[in-house]
Image (cartoon, rainbow over all chains, first blue to last red; front, side):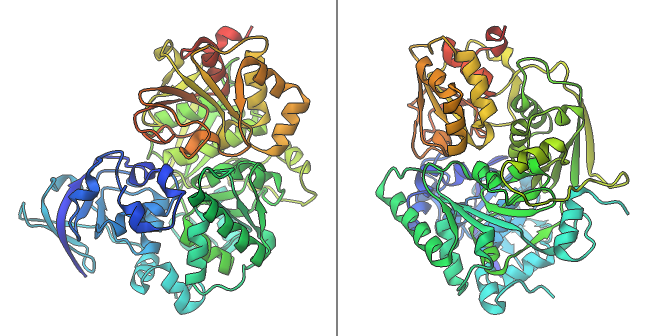
Length: 166
Length: 418
């Protein structure tokens, strides 16, 4: 699967409170509404800057903090096609895969704001068209590939009625 | 080959000999959801075409994050939880029962060797009871509600050996803040933190819960310790169930081992806006504060309230400070009342709010104003955490928070402990 868009860059340790603040997430299950507040405390106009298909590109430990699944969902509903980071916090990483938001662990130092990227999820190759270089992603564990290929954990359960990895 | 505590618990619950980095599907002994995460899990449960919960006795819902409800949006989500719990026969702890990470241990269902998941990142708290417990999101919670199982990557273990005895005025909160400052916010990512050594053995159970609670703030999947007579005595208050303690083998493999001597540790403070931005209290002493918070799943237990009361007894908080206290559970609230602790706190000027999460997560109970400084016993000081991104949050022990409430400035609590 090929994803194409522009990079929006963030730093290290972007926590889930920054991704979607607690003052919004408790109020509603309407993810389109929550998406309008994505990353608001780091960049109040961020939602306005997103074109469908764009990427969030960050440093280490992306998604640390609370277990709120509204975080990957708000990112997804805001039109972001994948998050690229040097590393992810574990609950966010699971939540993203479970809800079908692609997360890509790679060296993000070679991506600058506004760079045009193409991400090939099947090969794990990121092409930075602006810089004319490619970056290799760290492969996902097979269990996660299985869940992603099934379309998330909900689809996996609908298909098998439980966990099935063999 | 020797195994760590976590490897043993994941082996016994998956039916295979598990070691770090293996992927296992394991049976869960207990499953918890709170009001920020359960509504989405209920939706996922329905989308997964779930009909019944694997074992209603092993599930709890807790309404603690926005309790009582501050607005109609939250009320609708609380109603959704109550209705689902009624239909499925799940026990729901409604408003005022307490914060999930206190009421679940008090249920007596969680103990040594058990495997627990909760849709809240601080579910690692029950590691204090020698349980492997970890936080998950709503979809994982839904999967566990249906199947009674979850998949895990067996974590490596990061062992923290803490020697010595904590000095007077220095508590478990200071120690865990110090460790987080040392290894940083992602120092133990994907790993289990195992706390050991005489400093841990000397801690009360309340102090151990504080240590385990904040493991997630260094990225850890669990914060676990061995069980001892204190653990079993604590559990005996709530259950007659028999648990078998689990210890790491002498030849178990660790990803990392760090040793600390706590004998000269000073009270610690985490400065805005990062939990690992830690310094001794002296470095920030004198910083004016407008709000002080004692409570949360980190430090809302009886020992915490007693320490605060000891410092506040017979004194009045500074006129420019609001002090908010949220007992961690109804049981703790009642005990604190019987002991006169609540009276002391209220007489000193504290406002007591409903047992639960209090103002920690920014939905109610004391959202700070623009530019204000807050000192809190909570576990997170991210920008906007308490509902206002223009406020500044400092994290500290109940003693430091109480002392600071008296002077209106961040204060070393040892000045008030004679």
